[in-house]
Image 1 (tube, rainbow, N blue to C red):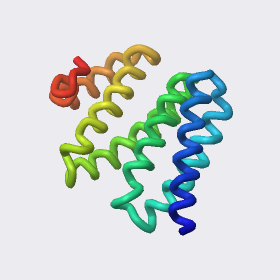
Image 2: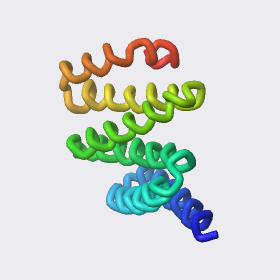
Image 3: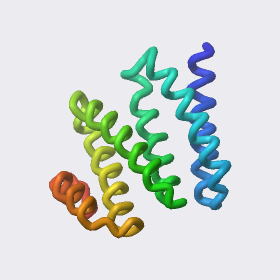
Length: 139
């Protein structure tokens, strides 16, 4: 099955990008995340119920990378897209995806609070997600 091969390839690319991020090979990490994202978005077009969560995960990883290299506009776009997908998934499966909403929102909050020193945006995110942050032990 070509679809299974592509899904495995995307997972491998995403995992390699995680390693490259941890070893500060940011250009390589970005290239691998973008390639994984491209494959996962294509797969999600045909089977959103199977692949949208993977798209959201790669978007979150890419947002963390962009935040680490201070490309905050790109990070915000990726966090926003990931949150949209996780919200959609959490509507149907809250026990599975609500924690991912919380984690992604927490990452966004940390970017605003610590990296951008944008306390207004940070407090807006904090207030919007405070119950989830408390529930999942972020605060």
